[in-house]
Structure formats: C-alpha cells, structure tokens
Image (cartoon, rainbow, N blue to C red; front, side, top):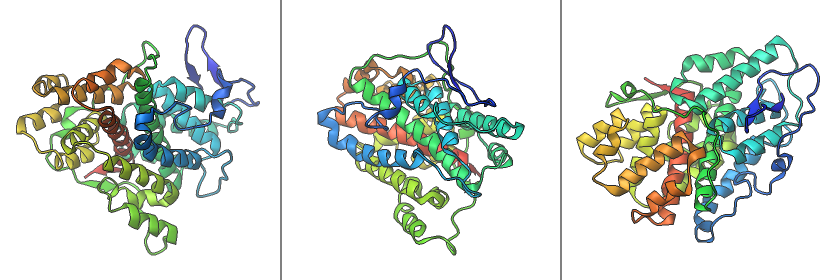
Length: 385
C-alpha cells in the first residue's frame, strides 16, 4: 500500500490496492513515526491538568503498544497483521482529519510490505478499509451484514474484536488530541470540502427501551483462561462495560486498558447531569440506541428536553438555550464528535466562559471521546433487539 500525495491537495490519499512490487514511497513526515509519546504525539500537557490527563493517557499509551507493536505474529485465530492494523488506523485517522494522527500512522505504515496482489488479498483489504471508514464516519450504518462481510473475507472472532478496538481507539485518540491542541492554542488545520459526520436518523430513537444483544460469541467461561476471567471479573461491574466485557475479554489485555480509561473518566466527572448530557448527545449523533437508552437513566430532566434529544437537529439549541452551560456543551460535543479536526481554541473558550473550569471542561470532553469509542463498540459488536 502506498502513501501518495495527490497533486494540488494538501492531504494523504490512502490506497486500498497493493502492487506486485514493494512500494518505495516515503511518508510526507517520516519523523512522525518516531515520536516519544505515540498517544499524544508529543503534545505538551498543561501543568495544571497534568494529573487528570495522565490518568487517562498512561493506560492509553499501554493500549497503543498492544494495538500497534513493531511485529505481529499471525496465526489461524489471529490473522490481523501489523499492516492490517496500521492500514486501518490510517483509514480512520483520515476520516477524522486530525493531521498529527494522519502523519503518524502514515509514517508507521509506509515501510511495511503490503499483502500480495491476489484478488482475494485485494478484496479482503478493500472490505477492511470500507468497514473502518464506515464505522468511523457513519457508525449507524454498521449492522450484522457488515460483520458478516468481514467474516466472509477471513476475519476471525479475535480479528473482529481487534479491528473494532482499533477503530474505537483512534476515534478516542483523535478527540483527545484535538482537545489538547485547542487547550494549547494550536491553530486549526482541516481539509476543505471533506464530508462531515451527520447525526443518525431520529427514527432509531423512537423507542423508550432498547435492549442490546451481542452479535459475536462471548468468552466461554468453561474454557476461559485465568487472565481472561480476572479481566472479566474486574471490568464487567463497570456500567459502561457490563455488556461489552464478555466480548472484549477475548483480547483481555486490551480490555484491561480500556477498563482503566473508563474507570478514570468516570471518577473525574465534575457534574453527573452534564456528563450524562454529553453521553446522551454523543450516542444520539453516533446512532447508538442502547447507549442512549442507558444514559437516559442517568439524566433526570423534563420530558420536552428528552423528546428533543431523541429528535436531534437544530431544535436542540433552541430548547437548551435557557441554560448557557448546557447550550455551550451541546455545541462543543457536536463539533468534537462530528468534526474533531475543526475543534479550535474558540470552541474551547465557549465552555470556559460558562463558569466551567479547565479541569471540568477536559473531563467532559474526555467523556465525549470515550463515549464515541463505546458507542462504536456497541454498534459494531451487537444490535438492538
């Protein structure tokens, strides 16, 4: 797979077809592959927020090492190679448009040999790329048929967990990096004319109950390993991971770090109502019916505002206009969820002007980033019954 620059366009073009010979193209920013911090991509943490952000960043760095090691041993059960992982990461980074991520994953991917040029390999890669792009850009379009298409090109149960964790992780990383760039006053650089994520259709949220059922097999307790059982017993009690943990425990090391991040984000919530509103609107945009229904139990408010959240759209701003904090928060969540590459210092100032401390703002936006990850896992690995 080559990383090419199209004449006249200042962005990456990610090819999905391999060539018979090894490509010699170099990434535009080769030094981006060797950053000291592969999660924050060498952004400097603000001193006053160091402790709060580090509690999330430390497990995220460990997770990066698990998802993107220098070498990956493939076998019959785990076929997702280092090339597959970084190709998927670059596809997702390009969807979100945060240039630091695009530079880093392109630089990591460039020297790796691609798959052979057979029709089967090309079709497999095309299916993986299409799935990654859809789950990143329009999560609500993913369904059981999308999972089946991945299985048809040879992805195993472990591969399905891996690809969805990679997509969710890059979604989380893109939003944390975008938020920190805004905190540090970095100018926004985005690609004009790129499509932006649209809110999911309102009819998905018409039901008051949205029971969720797994779309893949959970870890079988009878034959689970001791580390899998330990991971499951530790993280399944978290409300956010109650249903996902039995599926994610197939890759228990990854589940452990996701659990750490989820636990830290939950502990840092500055206000339960504001955090629930963030989670509600993020799930509403992404189309995660079950996450939306779960958050409604946390969010105690009037029937009119609940109905407006279900409907979504511009009406939200009018109904929530009576509360300046909530109105500013809805704007920030919409921007960070749909267009993280356009999240600017101005976007952040709209929140800090509403009597929210920088610490509270970081906590609420980290909640938004994590919810985007969990929304995608719920959509990808199961369905609403």
